[in-house]
Image (cartoon, rainbow, N blue to C red):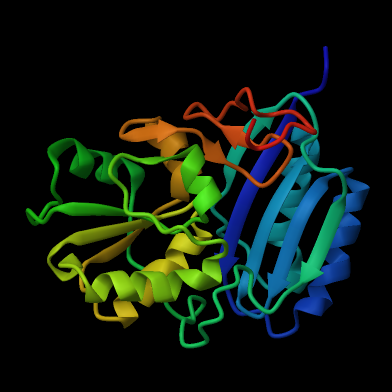
Length: 261
């Protein structure tokens, strides 16, 4: 039988004064464990997508969370996990970046203060009843790129036809000036949580008073409550292409298949 591949996604906004100091340590450990994927390091934190054997992933997470050189920076990573039958990454990259998710809005400093969040089970309850615990209407805000939204999103979600996340601030600012969003509870969401965390902080900055991020993103929601109130698939940035609400690769998912027929 083919070996089962464990896929993990995780991020953490945490101050890293000299990311390059950690780069070779992380890359060497990933290579020694035969892992593949991408790790981004920046002064604002870490963002990773890795795949490998169950044992290799477990050993890497133990290293990341307990290596003395990291000074407990990564001790409380929230991990999203899924399974595939083959390795969805072609190589191992550990890269230094200006931001672990590019927004180009320097006043947003998530390593200093996290955005308010809502757990998947609580969000499902809100969506089931049509309002939050205070009786406000709930608006789902998709912070992803347009082609991702086309593959799947929450029912009646607001979305923008953007090509990159750095376009989100202007798009949502324009919308907020033309609508009654201040009277509603906004829940920002994205694949794993990283974009929607920055998005929630930005929306608070432009005086939208009732904003949350979906804890764990879409993948975390699928893991905790399934596909309730979701339509379609969730695009992922590897050769699996898309996952359904059971975190299973869909018909799109094999190397070389185009995103659209």
